[in-house]
Length: 413
Ligand SMILES: [Zn+2]
Image 1: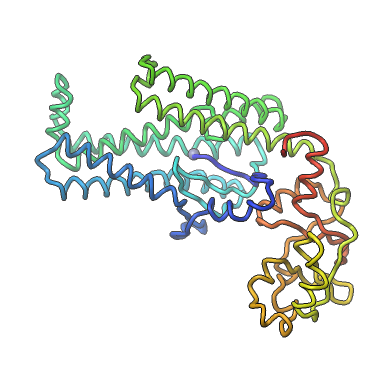
Image 2 (image 1 turned 180 degrees about the horizontal axis):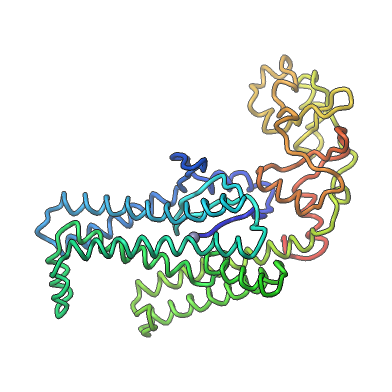
């Protein structure tokens, strides 16, 4: 459904890592080299969908019995989420085919997010990666509807009384027709131009091709996205107050749902816009300008107790580069110290608890600060050692970037 590409995410230093574990959810498997994760909120929506379906079956087919109603509801909910996964996989596979690595798909409350590691490099790639998702959902929907219609046979012809026609359907036709309509809805909803949803990305790729300017295209697409979001919010509110909106209907429940979706679209588009502003402010700013050059470093043989009492206490520094004979050997942080029981501090060396250099992400002093921010977010770390010719020249912290942004405008506030 939605996709992130090296998004800036939260700039809030303290909450960043917790938010990211919440966001990535728990891992359920791996397909085509892509990790499949499930967001905790997914369990809630799964129960809600199952419950709703079972209630619907109970109302329409009282003769089925409770076991069959709940069993079918669970089966249909599973196939539905399989459909959402297929939608996400289609994005990911096209992205991979266009040379963009995909690490993870997270299924969450409103569908899924594919973590594509970079922004597409051309309008054509972006268009193909975006359009394949809704097309997959529409295709799946069409398939389910066709097979469901075959199972239903002539009974759907009794259109004079739809309720009677539906209650006459057998279990297979019932869930196939439901899966068909929900997939068609999913496909159509994703075509709504609410950036960063698929429709918004399709719009951006077209604007990008027309203007040859990704920044301007993103700005316009996210503004259209916010507008569309507000339109949904107002339509939903109008429905709650009894108005009949074309294609959406009327009613308090439906209206509330539409308004919530609108609010979600609006805030997603606003976040994309904010990220764009942040990237604008960091463009052409070298890392060297934002980093701390006077970094206190420690030696690998230093006992953890000395690290705590001589280095960490009395400063607000959370991380210390470990340097061995002039070369960066690793990085040791407060979090590393926390894992060591206090009794073992004097007998444990920094080298035993640090993250070794080969596992660290580093940046160069002349690199763009916006690239460094991508790296901070992607790795979900608070700081990056700045290295030139194998030698440590500074430390770039997330909060150094935040301070720079605050000095220039209020976007990061
Ligand atoms: Zn999608």
